[in-house]
Image 1 (cartoon, rainbow, N blue to C red):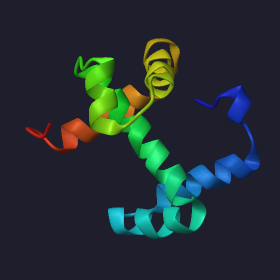
Image 2 (image 1 turned 90 degrees about the vertical axis):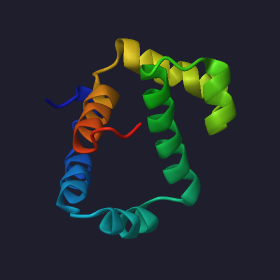
Image 3 (image 1 turned 60 degrees about the vertical axis):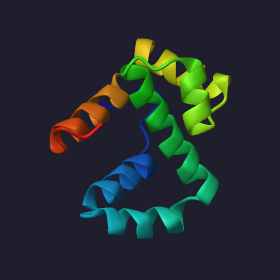
Image 4 (image 1 turned 60 degrees about the horizontal axis):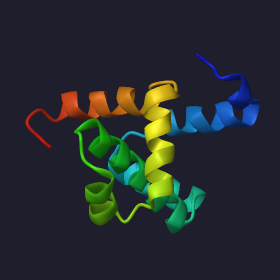
Length: 102
């Protein structure tokens, strides 16, 4: 599935490059070159917000634990409710790879 707003050869190349990474260490190396520290932290924060929302955490709990703003939490919640289920797909796969981890 390709989203029309993201349908671009350069973006395809980026995603294909990400799919070639074979370890967390390789991800650190690649994303350190590709993104700023703040960009990486923002993406990881949004993923953690999605995980916590999926587990039923409140906005206050999420804000306290992650430092995310209520605007960020709302944006992630909107994606969870009305998006393409990307967060759910990734989090479900992570959870199935790490049984018993929460």
